[in-house]
Image 1: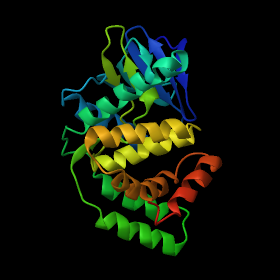
Image 2: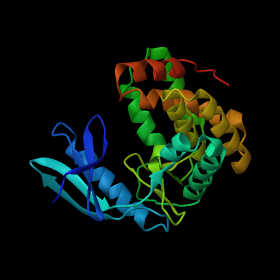
Image 3: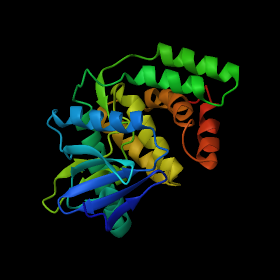
Image 4: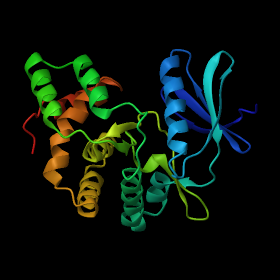
Length: 249
């Protein structure tokens, strides 16, 4: 295995290219259960007819767990937006259309989104009143079974030279409500300091999906609270501010 070409570096992992393979190597502290779950999620999504890199193997590299998948040649939509800002709206539309396609799929063996969020809210650094109100709101929202990526953003979509769009990083995939998935994407833009792009994304998603924006907004404090259990201190503080706006509309 040749691990000389680094594609990307993250807090807990390094991603390499090895010929026609992509090797994601996790830090020793990363949960083995989470790594195996990520590979299982992606394997389940592979069968749904979406453009997803196929899992080739789960192995260890120098004592660290690694997921090996197909390498997809191309550029992420985030890189295209950076290098070709005049066409940002076009790339944003590619993302929204891809997300809506994902939401047409079903994968009944994936974890349920509401169950996952319930567990995370219980672990979040919230005062008891806010936690109770968020859990009550979560319980009252409709339970759907749509495929949700859980972290769809421009950096997780690759456009190939032939113009095909591939979706990567299925670690957070669940079955649930599409509006919760959209709320997650909206907050991701904000976390990256792209507030204007977040609003443009949400307007486009709601227009194309025929979903009332207020319905997506009902999910935002819930999604923010569930996401706050991970990430650095600055991200947690930002997300918890959203989570405390229980009556956000």
